[in-house]
Amino acid sequence: MARPKKQINRRTDILDAAQNLFTINGFEKTTIDEIAKYSGIGKGSVYLDFKNKDEILLAVAERHVILLVEQLELQLKNARAPYLEFLKHIYQYHVITVFDMALSHTQNHIVLIHTSYQVKQKLSHLLERWLINIACILEKAEKNREIKYFDDYKKLASLIQISLQGFYPPYNIKYSTGCRTDLTKEELRSLLLADASTVIGIILSGLKNVNNKIKEYNNEAKID
Image (cartoon, rainbow, N blue to C red):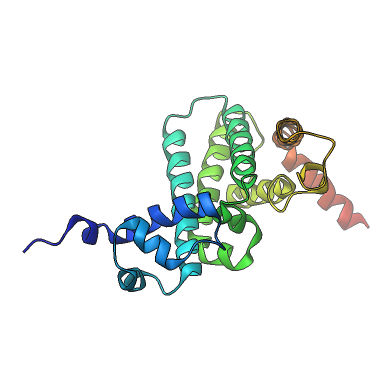
């Protein structure tokens, strides 16, 4: 006898249900019972795939990162010069999308990806894929003579990511809806995007002579 469709797609059904419930009710208020009922399976079946609710949250976060990486890889296949402008749009979109999702206070998996060292470790293989794709864009930009040659583009991609951390959760007071009572959420969103775009532009423009600057710094260090 064929297994029911729900059983075949059990893990996906559980994650779909959990993500919807986390968004509607928040992580803390959602129970395993509710996830099971929402997904149309028995509570015991949930435990066949996940030990607890925290593990479900991690899986939801992982699925989100997989989607982001796959979207980036698809965009990369269709990317056209100028590549720095393409990369700028990638970062702008990512910054504002994370802000929109984090602002709801219910999509905990988005915040965890940026604030939990443990989650980052468990998703390191996916974050590595993200950096590799950014590195590929940077290399295309160099071959198109938009930036100077750099001997390690993945390292460069990592440095750019570190430089932009202030525009992701946990947010600086300047962009915090809990602290900035003088601005509406939409005004905060515009402020974050404007500031992020300025910094992204500065970083990417600096890549046009980054290697020269590094060499100058190294020479000065040797003299000292």
